[in-house]
Length: 121
Image (cartoon, rainbow, N blue to C red; front, side, top):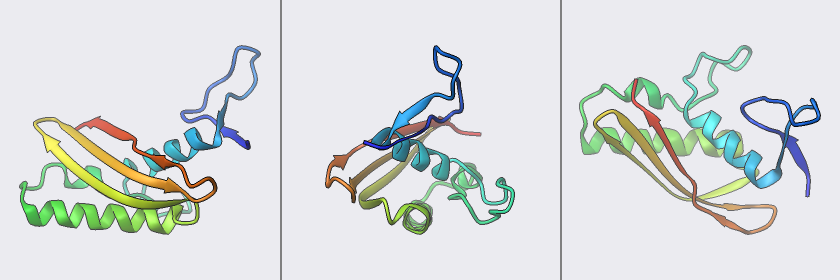
């Protein structure tokens, strides 16, 4: 199985760059995409989902639908060759954002169901 650099970047016990197996690396790439605001990445001004910018918007079904649509579009654009999204749900409770994602790895056909949680703001 291929290996990739671990996120966040760190060193292993031997002082070398820490590596992650492919499945874990894909999950780490999804996390980076979901919690990066457009404009944060040099030479990639449109990379990210913009989720952090919508945290303080009034909560409504319309906003939830817009957030889900934007996140699905970002995942499809940047990771569509690696995963197939089955479902994506965003919940904001008090000061916490939770994203439940269900996807299939295109390389193996395995179903993955990670949950990403971040404090709002």
